Amino acid sequence: QKILLVFGTRPEAIKMAPLVKEFQKDQENFDTKVCVTAQHREMLDQVLNFYEITPDYDLDLMKPNQNLFTLTADIITGMKPILDEFQPNHVFVHGDTTTTMATSLAAFYSGAKVSHIEAGLRTYNKLSPFPEEINRQITGRIADYNFAPTKTSEENLLSEKTPAENILVTGNTVIDALYFSVEKVNQLENHPEIEKLKNLVDTSKDLVLVTGHRRENHGQGFLNICQALKNIAEQSDAQIIYPVHLNPNVQKPVYEILSDVDNVHLIDPLSYPSFVWLMDKAKLIVTDSGGVQEEAPSLGKPVLVMRDTTERPEAVDAGTVILVGTNTEKITQEGLDLLTNEERYKQMSQLHNPYGDGKASERVVNFMRDLEVVPQ
Ligand code: UDP
Image 1 (cartoon, rainbow, N blue to C red):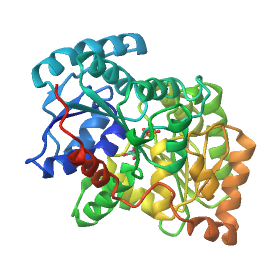
Image 2 (spheres, helix red, strand yellow; image 1 turned 60 degrees about the vertical axis):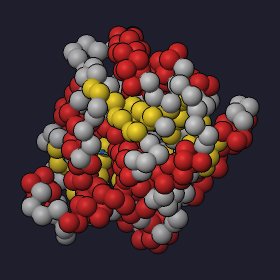
Image 3 (cartoon, rainbow, N blue to C red; image 1 turned 45 degrees about the horizontal axis):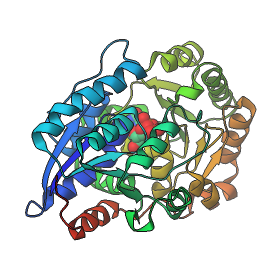
Image 4 (tube, rainbow, N blue to C red; image 1 turned 45 degrees about the vertical axis):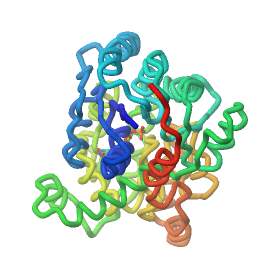
């Protein structure tokens, strides 16, 4: 079977890398190729380097003033010659980015079967998150095979009349990636970025790790978030480390409000191994990221999620994350409480991770091996 895996952003690369590795292990059954759209360039390349993955095709689409209109069009037209040349039987996409949606459509037009990793996440609010919810719903309609991370995501797909035999619950490949990385990070010696972090982290203090990038939080959302972080820094003894996303809509409010606050360290986005290292050292994580809230429970870290809605209710139900929206009061209160209320903290940090056991990629590849060969 000819397998083409396509991705474009850092989180997709992190979550697809274990699958690329797993397909590559079985060269007898699979001819595996990787295509990156490079919707994010720098942050994507860091992950590719860490996993030692060299893309077979690279659309290199990041350009100044890229927007959803040109990006979508560029991906669809860019995929055509690749699909024509390789003629994959199966195209794998991940999650909910513009790369995911546009590649699925291109693959469908070409006659290849589409497999969707991390399928079935829904908020059923088409404006939140924007444009991810629509991207994943469209991809879900197109996909032939749906690899759902949890039972809840499977139920969403079933309620949309996706045939049960085309869905497999696998767990999330992000946990595969995390286990691989924790092991590798501990073997890395003198990693320059981690050495720098070692100098920055004050081990006598509680560490709060922050990330944020969601489009729907741009504007007032980030102003509120920054104010809350300022409050936490001023009202506790914790050290806040915040790798700031490169998007100017994030950079501007964050640097304006937090640059001169004691105990807040604004740093550049970290490569994946350094981020994993830092997550492991954190006491509390404050984020609007999807991937981070899936990873953190495996490291026993409570998470405050700066979103109003979530397509990851499992974590809320399991109690490993708390939804705080972008409400300054709420973020401040919950943050300070988790830093001081030891009983509550301990209870949260011992909860089971609902997102998997690190074997998701293996399950996907076993499923594909058992499929009848589909003609191109
Ligand atoms: N991450 C990273 N460096 C950072 C911040 C996050 O490598 O400075 C990783 C994190 O471990 C997770 C992924 O990037 O696996 C999440 O990416 P992001 O928050 O950009 O996207 P989302 O998960 O919300 O789609």
